[in-house]
Image (cartoon, rainbow over all chains, first blue to last red):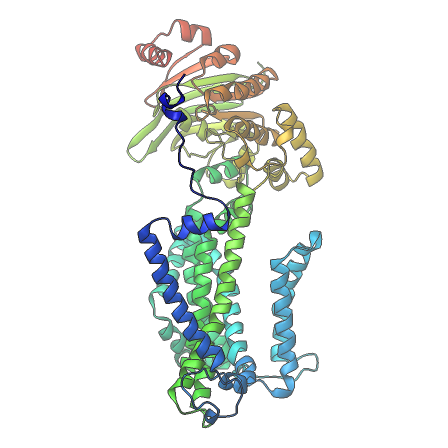
Length: 370
Length: 247
């Protein structure tokens, strides 16, 4: 028995290291000479960009100051603009002595959001339902006042982040139920209802939002004599809810179509009425299937709130623009870049949070159903 | 029997557009009778049993189920559906609910059984289909045979007078067919009125009172199972049987 005659007894080279940090780096970054080249080029680019951003945003930045004179250099960010105008960005034109009311609403909102992120055992569900019902009510009472001895604050004074959040939440929370109803209507077997819903959706989806907003605010009083009695802000809210619900309706219709016909037949065969079938069997599944598209629409709605600028409201972006034109801060263009960077970061924080939450929802429903 | 038929079809006709699916169907089923319906695909056998709980509407003739005539009156349809259980080829369990909730929801929503009682009933029927250990799982975690047994239990929870089975074993792997058929055989022995669309000849021979052979929307032949399988009368049935036997 000569060992070398048996081919597989020949010593083989050791396998590449595939475990541990070094192995992981090797597989993912340096698996071939071409990949190594790409890794090096990309790493260098990231380094240069990050270095530039850190220099600009932190090292050379001016953090505090009262006017454009505080930021003479264009090689650093001018955060002084943001810190100086901070209350305006967060509260808009809300009366200074009543900021505490807005703060309460912010805190309540934070509690509501946190209650949806973490579970605290069996009471979580009741707490969430309570918050969903009472938060809008409390927010309404605290923000507008005029009841419980609270001083009235006209909605025209809302502004900045406050206005952005109020419009976005009303649009989103209003358009979801409306969208579900429209989607059910459009898929209904009753021709009249189906046609009405279809044309409603097509109309609001087909008209540019700017036109809708301007129409509601400027033209409504001309067509409907009593229309002017409805508050401008309320009219804007109605406009937002109307066209966004049209988008939501199409999202939910997609979800409804994803449900196999057998689910409808099984519910019917058990003897469920239309509403029971929809409420307990079809919609729960359809809404789950719609989560990604729904969140897409929600993020769109959030960003689109900025078009209220057109009718004279100052949302977060609007108030940043107005501040840039104020006599203290009008001046060198590098303040502009700082201001818009700040706006971008603010919007991104909210939209990224929404997107993270939606992927959590998706994962949770996948676990349940395998 | 002193009682009239529990299901009676009188000259029932149905079209899908131009396609004439059911042609002058006459059918009487007495209480406790087990009927197996077979025939080539497209012959209208599924449509026939789907007419009984009006998942399909017929266009001419009359269908009377348990003394109630099926027409456009919604109340009639709802009361028929609560008396007639149906099991489908593709199970159609509700995937977002556990097995238990699948069984409870119909009783609770339609028959207004209190939740506690509905759960007890669910447990009873899950025991009968020998699947009680899966009660807290979701349908997606079960095998096809298990899902189909849950679907049967779900129908039985509604305390139906009539059970319809629409090719319930066709979508199953061969080794799971038996566990489902065993449940159906037990049910037949308890005296349930059953209409079963199937090609399982062993099942038909063991439990059926009558076998009906359909082709092109008509009932072509009707006989005792042994007579039908051993001595089919019509050429169409002979051809059909020779084809399914060669599989």
